[in-house]
Image (cartoon, rainbow, N blue to C red; front, side, top):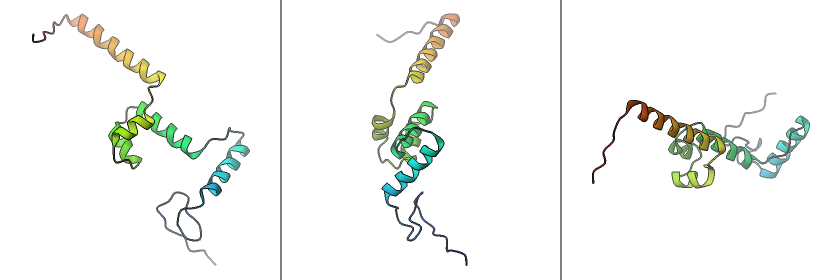
Length: 114
């Protein structure tokens, strides 16, 4: 006999009810998988944090990431997840370098109002 499949909004629902599963059970399962794979133990929150940081670093705008995470305020997402990584600093420096090099090649003079 085939079991009824439970439809749930959760990623790891309880197989009996479809409600949120006991988080310690999910964490234990994650740690067993990591141990079998010979990987260091990390938390789901670490995965979420890494995803957010890499997504922002890849250039996805903070409003989109904020919406993906269910945050009502993009400022919260920025303050929580957007660390200035080495790659982001290098990228900003390279952009400024190109801007300066291109402006000096074109010999454009930008006048600012007094």
